[in-house]
Image (cartoon, rainbow, N blue to C red; front, side):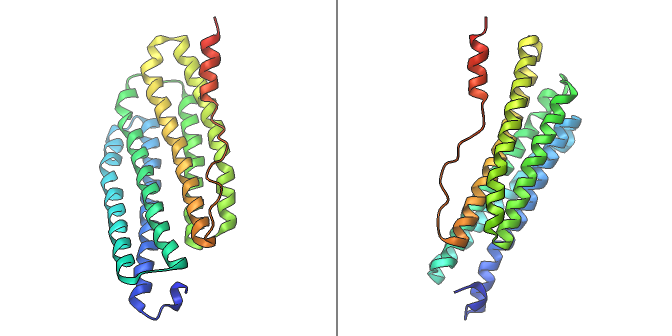
Length: 241
């Protein structure tokens, strides 16, 4: 039975509430990440503090979805597509809450790197990865809104591009640290920022897999080969005389 076929109107409203709340959380998570990266690039400590404070909104959103989902399950005893919709909302809200945490973690590092600015290419690299990750997040939220399986596959495949960009930036930052020990502290913070952005792409992929499950009732393969080559870079550098 689809949402529009429920004989109890309030049941439809309860399911629609979950969908609308996910859309709200998704928009907020996108803004947090975009503002956190902007704060990092521009050394904007005030903006960084706003991002850190805004994380409470996503935390509250996740709790609200969890509580509403439990209430619906207890009251309606949903089956099939309805149950998948509810379980899917719980999963997606968890991923979006983690995206917010990652944005907050980037914002927290703004102060640490303000006094030791690195080369412009590093910040451009962060912006490029962030733009790709945010595009992936927006597309997967669109896929959720339209229940599009085709869009899901596109989002999953694009994750490899984020991994490749992260590996390239990792190599660049590692080079700066080896050239001048004074860069180690700032570059380490920037490495964590890049990793946080790369993880946002992973959460977008998780959401894509959840959307596929909601629509089809089947699971996509749980693991994809990752393109993150940072471990091999570290090993190669360590072997050099």
